[in-house]
Amino acid sequence: MKSFPWGRVAFFVTGNTCKFDEARMVLAEYNVATAMLRVKAVEIQDDSVEEVAKVSAIDAAKKCGLPIIVEDAGLFIEGLKGFPGSYSSYVYRTIGTKGILELMENVEEREAYFHSVVAFSSPDEPPRCFHGKAEGKISREEKGSHGFGFDPIFKPLNGHDKTFAEMTKEGKNKYSHRALALGEFAEWYTSGFQK
Ligand code: ITT
Image 1 (cartoon, helix red, strand yellow):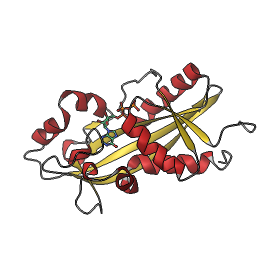
Image 2 (tube, helix red, strand yellow; image 1 turned 90 degrees about the vertical axis):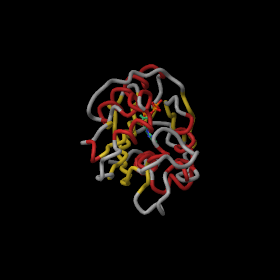
Image 3 (spheres, protein in one colour; image 1 turned 45 degrees about the vertical axis):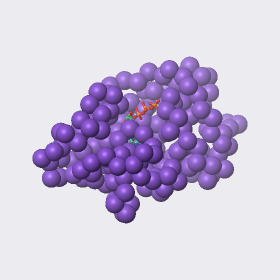
């Protein structure tokens, strides 16, 4: 790993262009250019977001033959005992934001958080994970048209009562779980992989 030649380019394996754009902006602040790789990496079902990210990263690095990052995130709603958590992708595709609001019609405890894990892996190195968490609340109704996924129903703490979907990408990146995890990754990546 010491003679590792990259460091100023990150290969981000994702099929989500919104995620990629958010990541590109964060990594640019660290002078790291981001390339998007659309590779069908394994995505396991597991209660742990970290485990899901790690397994994808190992598989993606093998398939690409490159050092890569993947990022996996989940929305954890306190009043629903952490649901949908690491199953957010499935829940979004099935019941969506409207389904979550319906489930929460009579739920007063609206605290929630997004947890993001960025997993870095290269074909000959075990994966390494970086975490980010954004605390906030689930709104009573959908608001805003930016972003993706659960953005229209998530209001980050200290976000002036706006949902992520009411913010620009730059605005969301000030509060987001993904920006925090990528920041941790970038610090390490640009420092020559110091511990
Ligand atoms: P990949 O190709 O990178 O896996 P994905 O869209 O499948 O992209 P994840 O598995 O990480 O992304 O995310 C699971 C779901 O959680 C995703 O479909 C969204 O509905 C939701 N989600 C994740 N991050 C989010 C964010 O920043 N804002 C809103 N919803 C988010």
